[in-house]
Length: 126
Image (cartoon, rainbow, N blue to C red; front, side, top):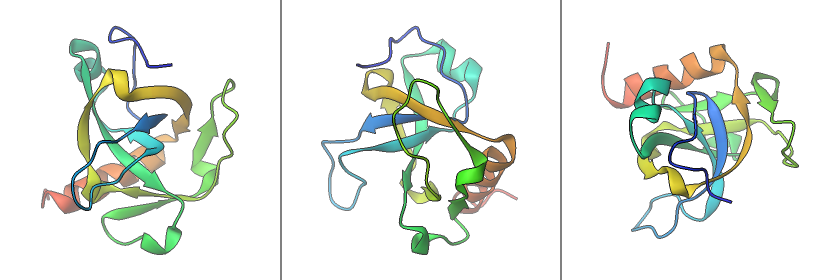
């Protein structure tokens, strides 16, 4: 069930997201994504900025951030299994909140900071 536009979505929250339709090499289908936009930005509008996650940990590098399962807290209502994951910072996207499905979990503050460093690398922010 999609998240309401008025719902509070926080930075570091992980949701199942339907990313289709896509074009070319974009991440497709239903996959977990971590919200990277700030809470006040998320509250102000109908969109959020997310980074898709992958369990293919061999993809990890300076902008594809390895997130150990120990840095992810599973949401109590989620049936999802928590696995080591990679935040694909080079696939960042803005999505409408209606694409957010069930909440899967939340990243630790250290993991959020690591993803922010991956984004800084992508955007050449020093």
